[in-house]
Image 1: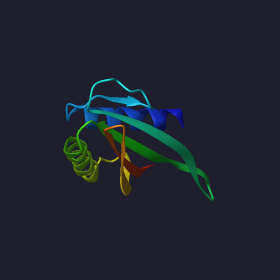
Image 2: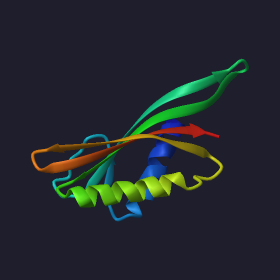
Image 3: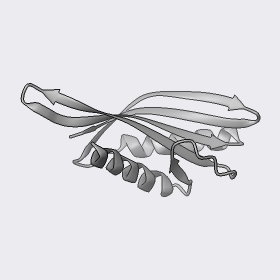
Length: 116
């Protein structure tokens, strides 16, 4: 399970870093905007034959002091993750939320990522 969680983190870091946006695991605020954070909640998926694969509820947060910038980055992430993620992952978008606090915007994207 730890391997699956790490490889998802590596995949997200690669994809989002390519957009020139820093990304870290969990809620580490960098002090510079924009930045992204992500969290994975990995659970095993079983069949009658035993462990079949792992599934992750993945949350990606885009934080910026500009709504337009946060929205544009979230759109780019969604476009990238909607592309074929190869033979190892099936990525399913769940929902998008927007929040503003103290002049800072956070766009939260929720995904289900499963092993193929």
